Image (cartoon, rainbow, N blue to C red; front, side, top):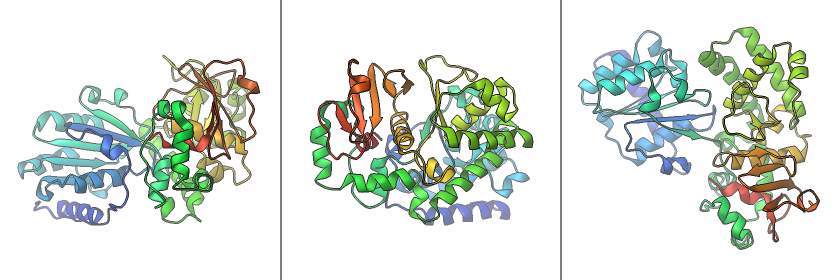
Length: 402
């Protein structure tokens, strides 16, 4: 396609990646994206599988090879060349589909994408970036042009599929609350969910668990380290001192969550101002490492004090604090990680979480109704049970929502 040798190398890398792309398992998001849109953004935490999703789309949609270009903006090619110039030549030679990876690694990415979108109306653009990026804050006003999606880690349902155990359909929260007994019975006829659920809590959230389970926690910790060192300063222009303060904050949080934060004491311990601390917590939340809960999540600002802090998914406990983590905290983290992808999860003083007008208490098989006995529309999400009874629902079943 291109005469320039450097550009030809980009094509070679793209084809090699395409040939190595697995087609045995697909994320549910692949079928939920409206691929007919002209400008599509997919963000997600490092390691969530954004690149694979994009390449699988090329293969499944059978996009014409001579009209399709995939590039990653962390390639050395872009240290001396602009994306907008590459795309101009690509379109002149008949290009119709542009897929751009790692946009957060490229200066002024939003402005160039906006210009490409406006200058080439015949071109479809799909781009991926860190979960840190906010499309509504991006320069170049992409918010009026792009349709945005987020790729979260694997749900328990997806983990079962990726592990080759079984393929199940997604459930809605309403499905679960209305008839969890029949649903659980059908699933339990095919698998023993508790055995797989225990594994999922330890290493099932990111697709790369299939590469090597023994080194999964090490790789997860290293992935977080790279995100802190590379992605975060690239998006927010933070200096080395700030990054080190955020590392210290994460260390403190990992040993303490879930807890109701005292912002003044925490800022003193980290030796930063109150506003800096709240900003750092927001960065960790955007990186999908920490989850902040509020009593009322409508209209919250970045500098508002959260009611409670959690690690955003259960694998983080094993990667950051080891196998001796509190099982109650791990269960609560699982519930948040599965429900927050589709619902607004809020803090409540009675029970553990509130979703709309429903209250949820999380616990083990012996969890009683004591905390929620006078609460209407209250449910127990209980670990260590295969099938529930009345308002007591197996915790693992909430992993079938996406």
